[in-house]
Length: 191
Image 1 (cartoon, rainbow, N blue to C red):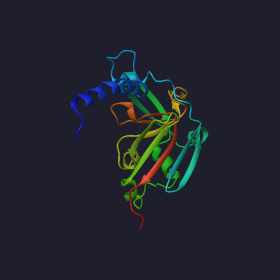
Image 2 (cartoon, rainbow, N blue to C red):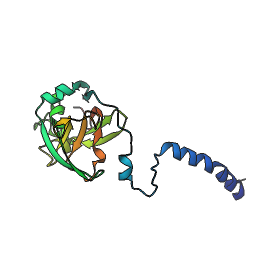
Image 3 (cartoon, helix red, strand yellow):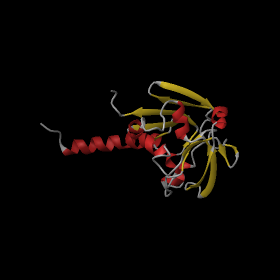
């Protein structure tokens, strides 16, 4: 025997306040309920600063200090920050250069690995994004992905000291403030 429709209605009405409270604690609310998701982004508190970057690939892991990142060849990018409606300038090493140091080399031999690998970049506040390895490698992409340590020629204190910035996305949703970890996973079968 199935419960009557009235029992379902009563149960739904009793659970509705619990669901609403759960949504309030899980979803950040903006004071202006009519604002867009883009507006909500910069209402967040600043991320804890990242003092170093840990990069892992194929069981190899290296940690880069800010000084290590500054000593690498620097690339400067000029991007539009759609969240703030401002043009900004960032400098830092190419992510591809950092991946080269942990063993993902931009060579013909590694081309299948690059084409079948993904990158998860994680911030100090646990925000994370994904990239394909091909889109960060200059031989495959016209865009640039950098690990920024400078903003407008000054240390980037606003972005958590280390940021991941790209020049290809229309919005900075895949920029990572307070970048602390990069994990590369290959989908290529081991031979």
